[in-house]
Image (cartoon, rainbow, N blue to C red):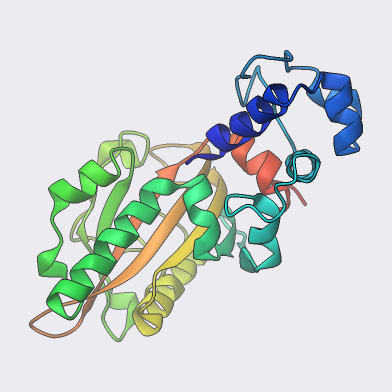
Length: 267
Protein backbone atom coordinates (compact mmCIF):
# COMPACT_ATOMS: atom_id res chain seq x y z
CA UNK A 1 0.00 0.00 0.00
CA UNK A 2 1.41 3.41 -0.99
CA UNK A 3 1.41 6.49 1.22
CA UNK A 4 -1.28 8.20 -0.90
CA UNK A 5 -3.61 5.22 -0.40
CA UNK A 6 -2.85 5.12 3.32
CA UNK A 7 -3.66 8.80 3.91
CA UNK A 8 -6.78 8.53 1.74
CA UNK A 9 -7.93 5.53 3.79
CA UNK A 10 -7.52 7.49 7.04
CA UNK A 11 -9.73 10.32 5.80
CA UNK A 12 -12.29 7.95 4.32
CA UNK A 13 -12.58 6.19 7.67
CA UNK A 14 -13.03 9.56 9.39
CA UNK A 15 -15.96 10.44 7.11
CA UNK A 16 -17.47 6.99 7.61
CA UNK A 17 -17.38 7.60 11.37
CA UNK A 18 -19.36 10.81 10.87
CA UNK A 19 -16.61 13.38 11.41
CA UNK A 20 -16.94 16.82 9.87
CA UNK A 21 -13.79 18.72 8.92
CA UNK A 22 -13.97 20.89 12.02
CA UNK A 23 -14.78 17.91 14.23
CA UNK A 24 -11.87 15.92 12.83
CA UNK A 25 -9.54 18.89 13.34
CA UNK A 26 -10.64 19.18 16.99
CA UNK A 27 -10.20 15.44 17.58
CA UNK A 28 -6.80 15.47 15.94
CA UNK A 29 -5.68 18.62 17.76
CA UNK A 30 -4.81 20.52 14.58
CA UNK A 31 -6.10 23.70 12.97
CA UNK A 32 -9.02 23.18 10.61
CA UNK A 33 -6.94 24.89 7.90
CA UNK A 34 -4.94 21.66 7.75
CA UNK A 35 -7.92 20.21 5.87
CA UNK A 36 -8.51 23.20 3.56
CA UNK A 37 -8.01 21.04 0.45
CA UNK A 38 -10.33 18.30 1.75
CA UNK A 39 -14.06 18.00 1.12
CA UNK A 40 -15.86 16.14 3.90
CA UNK A 41 -17.36 12.86 2.77
CA UNK A 42 -15.15 12.56 -0.31
CA UNK A 43 -11.85 10.78 -0.84
CA UNK A 44 -9.27 13.50 -1.53
CA UNK A 45 -6.54 13.70 -4.10
CA UNK A 46 -3.14 13.48 -2.42
CA UNK A 47 -0.17 15.61 -3.41
CA UNK A 48 0.12 18.72 -5.53
CA UNK A 49 -3.26 20.42 -5.90
CA UNK A 50 -4.79 18.12 -3.30
CA UNK A 51 -4.31 17.21 0.35
CA UNK A 52 -0.63 17.70 1.25
CA UNK A 53 -0.49 16.34 4.77
CA UNK A 54 2.58 16.84 6.94
CA UNK A 55 3.84 13.88 8.92
CA UNK A 56 2.54 15.59 12.06
CA UNK A 57 -0.97 15.83 10.58
CA UNK A 58 -0.95 12.15 9.63
CA UNK A 59 0.16 11.28 13.15
CA UNK A 60 -2.66 13.40 14.55
CA UNK A 61 -5.17 11.63 12.28
CA UNK A 62 -3.91 8.23 13.46
CA UNK A 63 -4.34 9.32 17.08
CA UNK A 64 -7.84 10.72 16.50
CA UNK A 65 -8.90 7.44 14.85
CA UNK A 66 -7.18 5.20 17.40
CA UNK A 67 -4.66 3.97 14.85
CA UNK A 68 -1.45 4.47 16.83
CA UNK A 69 -0.97 0.73 17.24
CA UNK A 70 -2.21 -0.24 13.77
CA UNK A 71 0.32 -2.31 11.80
CA UNK A 72 0.15 0.26 8.97
CA UNK A 73 0.47 3.36 11.16
CA UNK A 74 3.39 5.73 10.61
CA UNK A 75 4.08 6.51 14.26
CA UNK A 76 5.11 3.00 15.37
CA UNK A 77 7.44 2.78 12.37
CA UNK A 78 9.37 5.79 13.61
CA UNK A 79 9.35 4.54 17.20
CA UNK A 80 10.91 1.28 16.01
CA UNK A 81 13.69 3.26 14.36
CA UNK A 82 12.46 3.72 10.82
CA UNK A 83 15.32 6.10 10.14
CA UNK A 84 18.50 4.25 11.06
CA UNK A 85 21.10 6.72 9.89
CA UNK A 86 21.71 9.86 7.87
CA UNK A 87 24.36 10.79 5.37
CA UNK A 88 25.08 13.84 3.27
CA UNK A 89 27.63 14.62 0.59
CA UNK A 90 28.35 17.84 -1.25
CA UNK A 91 29.99 18.13 -4.62
CA UNK A 92 28.73 18.56 -8.15
CA UNK A 93 25.88 16.38 -6.91
CA UNK A 94 24.43 17.36 -3.53
CA UNK A 95 23.06 14.18 -1.98
CA UNK A 96 21.11 13.64 1.23
CA UNK A 97 19.88 10.23 2.25
CA UNK A 98 18.57 8.20 5.16
CA UNK A 99 18.91 4.49 5.84
CA UNK A 100 15.47 3.03 6.50
CA UNK A 101 14.20 0.16 8.60
CA UNK A 102 12.58 -2.36 6.27
CA UNK A 103 9.29 -2.11 8.21
CA UNK A 104 8.51 1.32 6.74
CA UNK A 105 9.45 0.55 3.14
CA UNK A 106 6.13 -1.08 2.06
CA UNK A 107 4.33 2.16 2.87
CA UNK A 108 6.46 4.26 0.54
CA UNK A 109 7.99 1.87 -2.02
CA UNK A 110 6.07 -1.41 -2.08
CA UNK A 111 7.81 -2.27 -5.37
CA UNK A 112 11.14 -2.58 -3.57
CA UNK A 113 9.60 -4.75 -0.87
CA UNK A 114 8.26 -7.09 -3.57
CA UNK A 115 11.72 -7.38 -5.12
CA UNK A 116 13.31 -8.00 -1.71
CA UNK A 117 10.75 -10.75 -0.99
CA UNK A 118 11.54 -12.32 -4.37
CA UNK A 119 15.23 -12.34 -3.41
CA UNK A 120 14.38 -13.92 -0.06
CA UNK A 121 12.47 -16.70 -1.83
CA UNK A 122 15.38 -17.36 -4.18
CA UNK A 123 17.80 -17.52 -1.25
CA UNK A 124 15.60 -20.08 0.49
CA UNK A 125 15.09 -22.16 -2.67
CA UNK A 126 18.72 -22.22 -3.81
CA UNK A 127 20.41 -22.00 -0.38
CA UNK A 128 21.93 -18.72 -1.35
CA UNK A 129 21.07 -15.64 -3.39
CA UNK A 130 22.94 -16.12 -6.66
CA UNK A 131 23.06 -13.55 -9.43
CA UNK A 132 22.54 -16.27 -12.02
CA UNK A 133 19.11 -17.15 -10.56
CA UNK A 134 17.56 -13.68 -10.83
CA UNK A 135 15.01 -13.40 -13.63
CA UNK A 136 14.89 -9.88 -15.08
CA UNK A 137 11.37 -10.48 -16.43
CA UNK A 138 10.21 -11.18 -12.88
CA UNK A 139 11.98 -8.06 -11.63
CA UNK A 140 10.23 -5.93 -14.27
CA UNK A 141 6.86 -7.45 -13.38
CA UNK A 142 7.33 -6.79 -9.66
CA UNK A 143 8.59 -3.26 -10.23
CA UNK A 144 7.51 -1.88 -13.61
CA UNK A 145 8.69 1.61 -12.61
CA UNK A 146 11.86 0.39 -10.90
CA UNK A 147 15.26 0.84 -12.50
CA UNK A 148 17.38 -2.26 -11.87
CA UNK A 149 21.17 -2.17 -12.23
CA UNK A 150 23.86 -4.72 -11.41
CA UNK A 151 27.39 -3.82 -10.36
CA UNK A 152 30.46 -5.91 -9.69
CA UNK A 153 31.68 -5.96 -6.08
CA UNK A 154 35.44 -6.60 -6.09
CA UNK A 155 37.57 -6.33 -2.95
CA UNK A 156 38.91 -3.04 -4.33
CA UNK A 157 35.76 -0.92 -4.68
CA UNK A 158 37.38 1.50 -7.13
CA UNK A 159 37.55 -1.37 -9.64
CA UNK A 160 33.77 -1.90 -9.56
CA UNK A 161 31.92 -1.58 -12.88
CA UNK A 162 28.31 -1.64 -14.01
CA UNK A 163 27.52 -5.12 -15.30
CA UNK A 164 24.01 -4.17 -16.36
CA UNK A 165 22.59 -0.66 -16.65
CA UNK A 166 18.85 -0.04 -16.99
CA UNK A 167 19.03 3.01 -19.27
CA UNK A 168 16.83 6.02 -18.62
CA UNK A 169 16.47 9.00 -20.96
CA UNK A 170 16.59 11.34 -17.94
CA UNK A 171 20.08 10.18 -16.97
CA UNK A 172 23.12 10.50 -19.25
CA UNK A 173 20.79 11.03 -22.19
CA UNK A 174 19.80 7.37 -22.09
CA UNK A 175 23.38 6.14 -22.52
CA UNK A 176 23.99 2.50 -21.59
CA UNK A 177 27.00 2.62 -19.27
CA UNK A 178 27.36 -1.13 -18.72
CA UNK A 179 31.08 -1.90 -18.58
CA UNK A 180 31.98 1.55 -17.24
CA UNK A 181 33.14 2.32 -13.66
CA UNK A 182 30.30 2.73 -11.15
CA UNK A 183 31.57 6.26 -10.51
CA UNK A 184 31.15 7.25 -14.16
CA UNK A 185 28.16 9.57 -13.68
CA UNK A 186 29.52 11.90 -11.00
CA UNK A 187 32.38 13.88 -9.49
CA UNK A 188 35.03 12.73 -7.01
CA UNK A 189 32.70 13.13 -4.03
CA UNK A 190 30.06 11.04 -5.79
CA UNK A 191 32.71 8.40 -6.59
CA UNK A 192 33.65 8.19 -2.92
CA UNK A 193 30.00 7.80 -1.94
CA UNK A 194 29.22 5.05 -4.46
CA UNK A 195 32.39 3.11 -3.67
CA UNK A 196 31.38 3.17 -0.01
CA UNK A 197 27.94 1.83 -0.99
CA UNK A 198 29.60 -1.08 -2.82
CA UNK A 199 31.73 -1.92 0.21
CA UNK A 200 28.89 -1.73 2.75
CA UNK A 201 26.45 -3.71 0.62
CA UNK A 202 29.08 -6.37 -0.08
CA UNK A 203 30.21 -6.72 3.54
CA UNK A 204 26.76 -6.45 5.16
CA UNK A 205 25.04 -9.03 2.97
CA UNK A 206 21.58 -7.83 4.05
CA UNK A 207 19.11 -5.72 2.06
CA UNK A 208 19.75 -2.00 2.58
CA UNK A 209 16.95 0.51 1.94
CA UNK A 210 17.55 4.25 1.47
CA UNK A 211 15.47 7.34 0.82
CA UNK A 212 17.62 9.67 -1.29
CA UNK A 213 17.29 13.30 -2.35
CA UNK A 214 19.75 14.57 -4.97
CA UNK A 215 20.23 18.02 -6.43
CA UNK A 216 22.77 19.64 -8.66
CA UNK A 217 24.67 19.10 -11.87
CA UNK A 218 24.69 15.37 -12.43
CA UNK A 219 26.80 15.53 -15.61
CA UNK A 220 27.43 17.77 -18.62
CA UNK A 221 24.82 15.90 -20.68
CA UNK A 222 21.82 16.28 -18.35
CA UNK A 223 22.48 19.54 -16.52
CA UNK A 224 21.00 20.33 -13.07
CA UNK A 225 18.44 17.83 -11.77
CA UNK A 226 16.36 17.33 -8.65
CA UNK A 227 15.39 13.75 -7.82
CA UNK A 228 13.81 11.94 -4.89
CA UNK A 229 13.79 8.17 -4.86
CA UNK A 230 13.95 5.01 -2.79
CA UNK A 231 16.70 2.48 -3.32
CA UNK A 232 17.38 -1.15 -2.45
CA UNK A 233 20.94 -2.47 -2.36
CA UNK A 234 21.18 -6.27 -2.20
CA UNK A 235 24.33 -8.40 -2.29
CA UNK A 236 24.29 -11.30 -4.76
CA UNK A 237 26.62 -14.28 -4.79
CA UNK A 238 28.21 -15.70 -7.91
CA UNK A 239 28.61 -19.45 -8.36
CA UNK A 240 32.06 -18.88 -9.82
CA UNK A 241 33.02 -16.91 -6.71
CA UNK A 242 32.75 -13.28 -5.72
CA UNK A 243 29.76 -10.96 -5.44
CA UNK A 244 27.57 -8.56 -7.37
CA UNK A 245 25.32 -5.79 -6.06
CA UNK A 246 21.70 -5.37 -7.14
CA UNK A 247 20.64 -1.71 -7.28
CA UNK A 248 16.88 -1.16 -7.51
CA UNK A 249 15.62 2.44 -7.49
CA UNK A 250 12.15 3.92 -7.84
CA UNK A 251 11.40 7.62 -8.28
CA UNK A 252 8.74 9.25 -6.10
CA UNK A 253 7.19 12.70 -6.15
CA UNK A 254 8.69 15.58 -4.22
CA UNK A 255 5.62 15.96 -2.02
CA UNK A 256 6.45 12.60 -0.46
CA UNK A 257 9.94 13.87 0.32
CA UNK A 258 8.78 17.24 1.62
CA UNK A 259 6.02 16.03 3.90
CA UNK A 260 7.34 12.72 5.17
CA UNK A 261 11.09 13.29 5.05
CA UNK A 262 11.35 17.04 5.72
CA UNK A 263 14.89 16.85 7.08
CA UNK A 264 15.98 15.20 3.85
CA UNK A 265 14.82 18.08 1.67
CA UNK A 266 15.65 21.07 3.85
CA UNK A 267 18.16 22.05 6.42
